[in-house]
Length: 208
Image 1 (cartoon, rainbow, N blue to C red):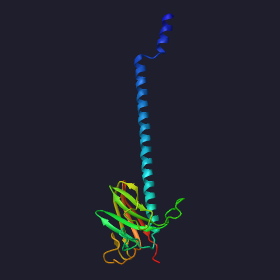
Image 2 (image 1 turned 180 degrees about the vertical axis):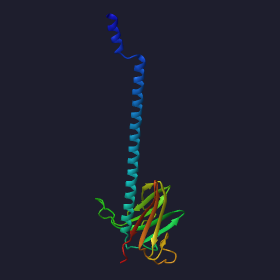
Image 3 (image 1 turned 90 degrees about the horizontal axis):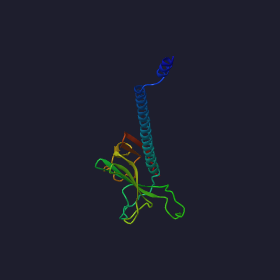
Image 4 (image 1 turned 90 degrees about the vertical axis):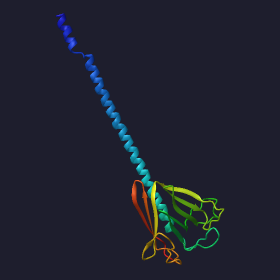
């Protein structure tokens, strides 16, 4: 009778091998769950980073459009005081463009009521970044402070084209129309990693 009772108690327990196997399975399941969790976190971070980059691209295009649509009818002057050839001046430098003009609508902060609403801006590519330079005056001099703002990084191409009513050119004023005051429209094309072929078309204000 005693032997039978002991045998029954022995059958209800786990051997050391069985416990080790169970612990190993639990460890594998825990490692797999941790890997899946880390992968989900990494994927979320990549998605958030891409979303933030996409928002920066949208903001840069919005700033570009706003500046161009507020192009002033005023002919700006260079640093020597001589008038520029047209209201907007653009050229192709190597593989990228540079464009400079004066626009209105600059925000006047409290305490700056005597300031001008005009702003001189220049867009160009520097070290694979789209950079916006701005001066709080329409006709800056050698002593004028320029504010440098990096709008986008990883910009592999920045091309500005100008439409004269018949054709597109990457220079303004074009060599065939040196007296042209302004183009009818501007096209901006960029390759911003990881999105190539970004394009923005802007119709400029009509000549008065």
